[in-house]
Image 1 (cartoon, rainbow, N blue to C red):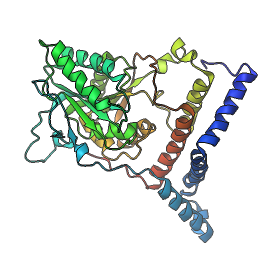
Image 2 (image 1 turned 60 degrees about the vertical axis):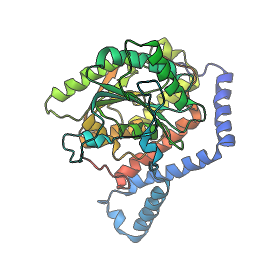
Image 3 (image 1 turned 120 degrees about the horizontal axis):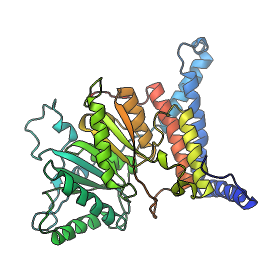
Image 4 (image 1 turned 30 degrees about the horizontal axis):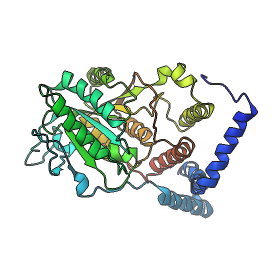
Length: 387
């Protein structure tokens, strides 16, 4: 499997200590998990064809479970007025006044919006969700911008840095990086408004930040990429090639998705040499995904996913989750919409400073997936298909 079982009493004690600390420091998560297990019963009692549901006690249980599901269902936070604006760097190197963000739907061929958006469309939009990333962000931006300038200057590109309510200087770090880049590259200036910094007033989670950026992008193709730069940005070319191949393969459709994958690395040192607990949780989560019906994509959590504009609108217009499990919701919605998805191997390396709290977030993701499946199965969540 790529990792070893606990080889000592110390390893077993470590697992026990983690479980104990979870209960001591995050009791609400444990309670919520228990409630989530109850919610799972919704899936088994919602088979309306079952004759057992026609007697009064069964209907009462069904109503109670449905009510419980409504109570724990995800509720995305609405955008504020300030979150519909962005800051950028002017050609003279100054930080701009807040500028209005366009809507992705305005750039669809079927859009009836008048007047047309004043912002011209671009070929590639890059969404970078960032929470307290002032230290890791500059390296990622340098790699991404160098690649975009070299390959897509003529077609047009933009980066939307979505600061997810950071407590450090993430937004300021992105803007000062852009100013420094302008000064150090006088012969290859940044395209106007190509670096757009959006600051969320309150933390929404990675999924909420990505969704916000996806709803305000101008690109014919939109990718989200993690701020840590763990995935080699030039692998965007491979994802684009795969995306275009899907679009030309019958039945043809403009709605396509290409997801970066690290599944080919499962037996490499980058994975095998990680801690037992980390690998144990990884394989357990993959097993859980299979039980919940998510098996067509081997690596659901890679933070490098590319969407055609049509697919982005279909997927992100109705997203419910804002935490780490949002990647799985993307795949659930894509499957229901009949959107073709390709899994593309990418180059990836571990970067220090992860924002994931391994055990806690693994428990929350398991619960969120349970609620997701129950929500879509019962109609509490709506697919809202179409563009």
